[in-house]
Image 1: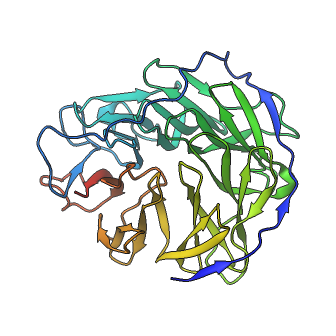
Image 2 (image 1 turned 135 degrees about the horizontal axis):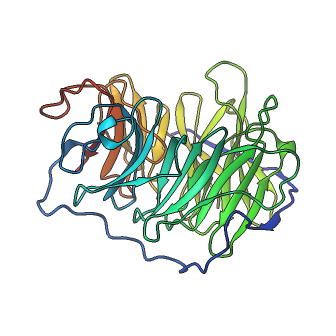
Image 3 (image 1 turned 45 degrees about the vertical axis):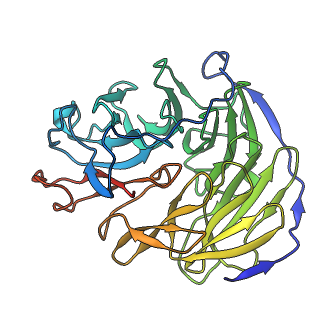
Length: 374
């Protein structure tokens, strides 16, 4: 293992707190008890099932993609354009499937909206997602209450017209999101953390730091890891990864490693995973050391940082970062998004056009699948 030690340079940053105006603040129930992993009635061996189906298991007649799974592995959110689900054409839908019952729940902001990537809380009750009518905006939906709120600070500096969701804490009470405008490289100029328990938005990174390429908030919202710049596999250093703790300055995590791409911060805030130089690195917050933990580019990792989904030539592999052992979870070309792995690594969701992953797959469409890894 490559281990690099360095003294991190801390830069002063300002933390601003603004009150929520997009919707009236409501009392938050407080910290949630971590859910028990979903266990089907019949014990399972590793296998793949198709998630993008109708309530009764029928095939969809349109493409489905951009899937996320809840931490307990019971619910999967995905985007679809299937006409037999009321979508189709250029009108996409955001659906959440309960794997125990097969029931589908739609999240609908009204006509004309297009839906992008989503993230689920550990129990699947909260869904953070990006949607657009004219411009992208970040949202948080509560499946228990049916309430959807647009995430937007009260008085952000400068001109801002669009935004996107980046991260959702396991209990669903902290959301990292970016806002910006269409002027040049200002699409993701401001990074905020919404704390639903207090109804406040905390400015994590101001526009002066540059465009944000991604962000991840830890479980209690006190630490946010984020990427400045866009990821590129070229020789130039186009992106760096930073860590910002509440009330403190930011620390760069990837000095000397060239271009870095954030994967996530662990729920306990103790480690930050990022891609660099063709491999996955783990930064230890307590020691300030960086370790190369596996080869390949990771797209998702578990809340505890023990498992990651890493791209290989033959498709995505689930890698145990403690032992280095990996196993294939999908075919070549399968796409896994940042929310595509359950908390214990027992479930990985992906989209694929492969017709031979499950029996009777004859729709010729991009579908969403879930791989049970144990």
